[in-house]
Image (cartoon, rainbow, N blue to C red; front, side):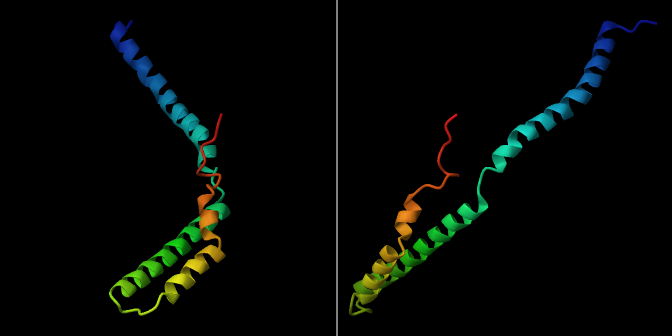
Length: 107
């Protein structure tokens, strides 16, 4: 007994999509997986650590500037010392260099 053409086409599409959908998903994951492994975790942790140290020093400098402005801190030594610490640690220089995982890769 021959089935109508629409019914045969529907069964064919169901059977094909049962194979194509999982195959396409696996191929997509295989394509994207290497891109997710591109970040060097040690370099990333070092970069994040440097940024946190800069933020901490910046917050302390801001606190001392406000204290000086409100005349709670009668001298500028803490501000000068922390600016010197920031320059001594070269945190700004290191943070200004973009790590490999932030720079766009050319094909």
